[in-house]
Image (cartoon, rainbow, N blue to C red; front, side, top):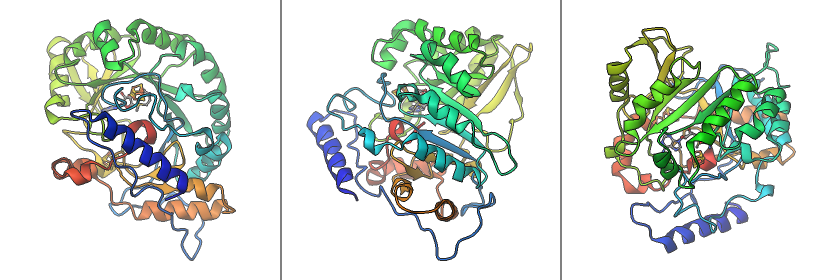
Length: 390
Ligand code: SAM
Ligand code: SF4
Ligand code: SF4
């Protein structure tokens, strides 16, 4: 582990230990981070057919552009942990726009067609539209642009929407956990109003975004009574609402199975008011299961990573804010591509390192979640979602 990493992790652990917060599990991301990817002895020409140990190929990449956020959603960055003493990454530790673009170009030679920028709150990364412009120039081997999308909490979307669109961003997902202002303010824990997120979505529509999705994390007992009103609000608007099961990502959100509302219950509640029928996935590996309103007024989706796992078709890799490649949202080990990018390694060598890393992948956390959540030592090591990207 590099010296800066040691200092940072010691500070994180000290910060959490000092808080001694009930329900919060001490995070231990000081281990297993920064593995050196293997380039291999013989270099192979880049190709998009590398299968992992479970026969899955690499198709999507999520890139976290910042580990910071202006919200403190209780299920993601609880205030007690992510306070002013939290050791966020410094600017030098972040991948630069040039490094992100180079890495993306290399990934595109390996079959990656879809890029999602995330965080933290990606719109907090200064000049993000410049990065989008750079990424919009990248072409796949058959000369197609990448499918470029971004997930945001929507808080500064009114200010940014037009610039994002002009830079070449194609799609947008906005997170919103309900329409009840008091509940939403409590869930984001910074007193942010619903109206401003809705205004951000309106700004995106005005800027010409057509494929807007809204993500709602459902926590049983907290916002599950908002399901039908959210469905009613977005029905017929062209916006696709997706309900996400509350997940045990990271190690600080006090996750508890009793707070997970199974997606089939979400669908049953909407169906009782607005009849739904199941529809086919858009493509293999799509994480959301799709349902459409029988009256033709649009669709909703559910992402059931707890109750109906989809590891068998998971074609996704993640790049953390500081250039570590993670093979699973619930991983505790990352592969250090930042060091590789900052060394003299060629694109071909980096491509081989990515192919080798992917070929050795065996991750399928959601399928074995039960055994992990029962085992405190395994459970305590997952990296935070704000760092790895949602
Ligand atoms: N800040 C941006 C946002 O909130 O949209 C992007 C990053 S956020 C980590 C990406 C997505 O992960 C959001 O839709 C958020 O609601 C979701 N998320 C965060 N923590 C989660 C959890 N514990 N369970 C389920 N989804 C979660
Ligand atoms: Fe921030 Fe998004 Fe996490 Fe909420 S879910 S704290 S908005 S990164
Ligand atoms: Fe993919 Fe890991 Fe999620 Fe399974 S648990 S779907 S392998 S990210």
